[in-house]
Length: 321
Image 1 (cartoon, rainbow, N blue to C red):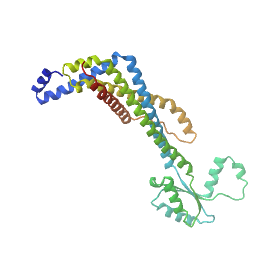
Image 2: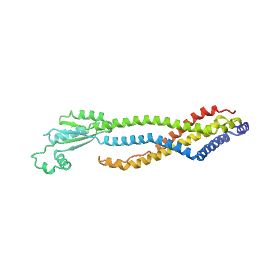
Image 3: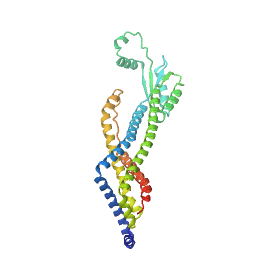
Image 4: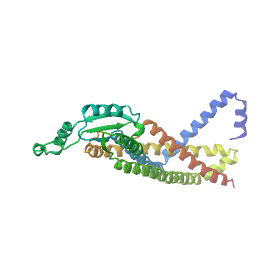
């Protein structure tokens, strides 16, 4: 910036300087966008690399989010089956149901008597005609207990099962939750994998943008030397390159969002078919609007960071000869 420009600026009131600050930034931001437009091939290739790099951790995040949704739905449907001793009277069973219903750890209690259990077994097993020849009903009465949300975890459900088995009318209880523990372990592994891959790809994005800005600085070396000769500050010279990095990040983040949406659309039907086999109607979730803003914000910050590291190193090294 020349001395005359500085003098003119000093004569402006504060409101004028405030407005001019944003006008200059807007002009340089649009100029940097025009510079990208004048080099479409290299710009598109850089943005495509950024989009693919950012889409990989974002895709894993979508996978983790959907896995957590499926886990929580199955977790809330987890039940404890309590098998009642034979020859217990209806009054005793009703008293047991009342006691279990008062437990703070219990959300719902459902009683299935021996006849209902036999009918359900006949319907599900396909041995209806064969079971008709039995002299007596071999199935016990069952109480299904649904824990509250706090006790629906594997550890909490086991604690509740141990407490329920102390009731004298209960023969034994069953909690089939090992598969849920395995699923939760897989989800935790995916979360750590996402963090590790995201860290590596964030570093790759910063390096790619930094190298791209370095090449742009080298191509405009003569122009930078002239600007320094006429008194332009380093901040004024650096600003267009910083905006270029931000534009790379913003457009790369939007490309990553588009890639994620295409992947979700492509995989949604296959996932729906798989979950249908388990009686679930969940739909695959994509990135929300808030997550889109977070992705674009992170990408623009990475673009600015890569540009900042590059311009601080290379523009300072350029001196008029």
